[in-house]
Length: 261
Length: 257
Image (cartoon, rainbow over all chains, first blue to last red; front, side, top):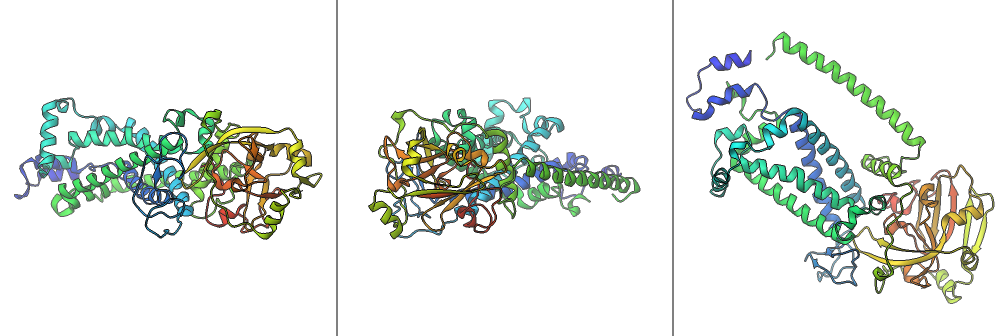
């Protein structure tokens, strides 16, 4: 019913020209309910993991390579921040309060929820066509020309076209695929490789990474990559139109009720 | 959008959703009972982090009950092994130290057929075991050492731990320093009452004269200066009943992660 009505209503004069393809799509949400729910659960978990991960790191802000590392062995690098324990000499002359208890509890709980949510998302995308339709680049877009055009418009901070409110562009698709299938699996792997009980059953998890301290260092860098993605992602949302992108991910409708009617 | 068709659809969705939710809750109830029966629920399962802790502990018990901690070649032993600082020793400890720990006792009581007080020499007379394993602190640092001692399972055999035992408490001579492990960990072949390190006596800095090594769990489960074990079928009566001083202080009881 709604679709027929909206097709009959003349387009408002202020609508951009490309909006012709929009009304047909308004009957469907921009993002499916499953995508929206898993997106926000993952967001909450990631923020919890980020904060608690930082809290855990500040108890020993030194990083190593190989199997072992402690204050008596040379460090790969040390983050120049104050620490929450007094083992590491930071030069600040004070020790921050220890927050590791709840940080570790919350870190592992958020990891569990994020992993289960991620599994639900990845398994469901195989059935719903989300992977094929929304994430895998269109064949026509897989050209150097198309890639450089999209990249150039991003580098100019150009406002995205109306079309992009309804579909991911090539760079978005590639970066989401990278986050889902490279960064998240890597952060899970490097995390598990630090668990003494897990690696007792699956020693290859840590041996392939070159040792437990290497796993810790890699976990830190993959987390930084995910943080970088988060910052760019949020920046892009502001650039593309904060309220429309947020509405699309919350209610599924990029346009307000007024804009739709 | 408020036509009867869509309202009917949402009612159907509501019923299906309600049934699914009820089945889910009932399923969770059954799962909780099964988990409890097979010892898959950690003592700190309550509270807001209980879900994560229970998932971790249950998965580890299902996946890694018998797996062995990684052992390393001699060449990978940390030189020198790093000793985390300890509180200044109490006068009581200093007296034992002055006598080269000749009078140190390990009292074992609780659900055992023969409560026993062991001297270090008695413990050393049992078949010894050595392992080159990593000790990793929850802070992030680690080292590898050779640990020499008697498997806890052997001592539990000697005292005749009763079949209904579920946990082993282990207490340090230092106040408020105690932990528990479940029987899977207590009977694990690498869980060691350690009195030697790298071919020598276990240094005081590393917990000498007696430290419990639980190589599949992080540092704080590896309590130093052990002088008392209690075998039990529950965790009540000590601290907040969470099974360890660390858990009372807000750290996870199960530290295998």
